[in-house]
Image 1 (cartoon, rainbow, N blue to C red):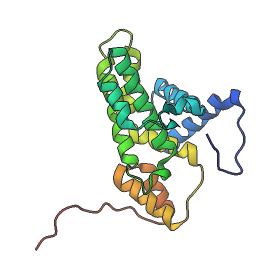
Image 2: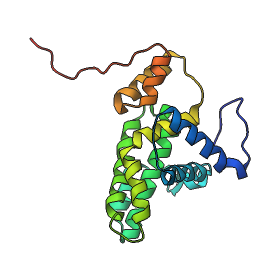
Image 3: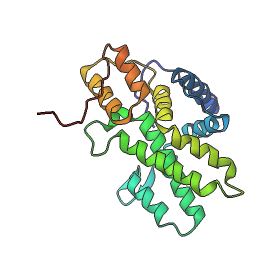
Length: 210
């Protein structure tokens, strides 16, 4: 993955997992999000894994790139076994969480926005929980997937804080933050807006009275 930031420390490979654990735990406190230790461990593993581009991108006829979420969902729906279905759902949830958290700003002016990733990822983890909660081998992970499904936006905010670490100041950034807040209810987007002097207010969709 390309790192375009400046002034950040270069993290040695053997310290990546420790770095992400410290960052995630700090962000959880800042975002006021309670999480089970097993779920935190799972999220740290996602971050550690996707620091390697070959884990995030897949081979396609057009080269190595990020597979569309709709195709990942299709893989799950058309799987030949429960194992393949669950693996496809896990991949869908993991990629959705990572991309929505680390690349929220990249969605501006694209066909799909961050709320699409939030919905797809949360539903994938929710389905995984339903499939695994009654099985002997999957029972331990079922609670992790349930928490990720229920708190998906919160974990997106956590990953967003881990990836960003800096404030935003341009008008374009403010508008984008407001757009993310409107679409997802992101607590972090709302907090950043207030920090910049903008009070986020939901726009009513009710029809005007005549």
